[in-house]
Length: 198
Image 1 (cartoon, rainbow, N blue to C red):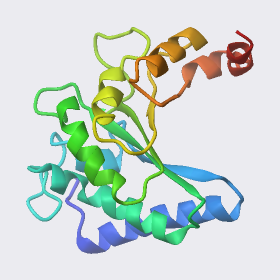
Image 2 (image 1 turned 135 degrees about the vertical axis):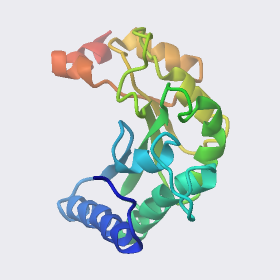
Image 3 (image 1 turned 30 degrees about the horizontal axis):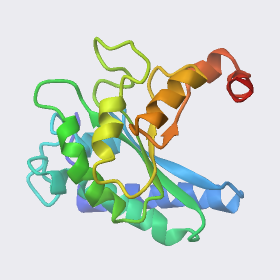
């Protein structure tokens, strides 16, 4: 059965994130993205659907829900060089009753970016990587747009974007600074070359 993480668990997992980032740094990668979306552990702290804690990491306040994410970001940032890129993928909306809401993102981003993030990207929370009832390109644009109200770091939008024209639309409207293409690249490994040639 699941149980609440104790202090020792929190430290151990935080240090595992640091160790993974150090391996990437030592292997000459340019950066890492900390995964806090799609129902994984850090997302479980952020989502009020799963965070039932009543301590400093409480699920009843945004400060409590972001505390562990901030501690992980801070620890990773402190362990690597200043020019090593550290970004966060956040499940910014659960799209379920009682879950995390897009309206919370300006405040959440303000808290998170203070820990030294170089960028932030958005996807689904407990709804995984889809937005129920929204198959249109850029279906997480409301998340990135809300985040840009307070973001002083680049904001990346993902979700159903497959063409250069679609990507340019979200950049031109100011809903994002960067665009991520995942499934489009899996379907066609040459998609980026084709977009650049358009």
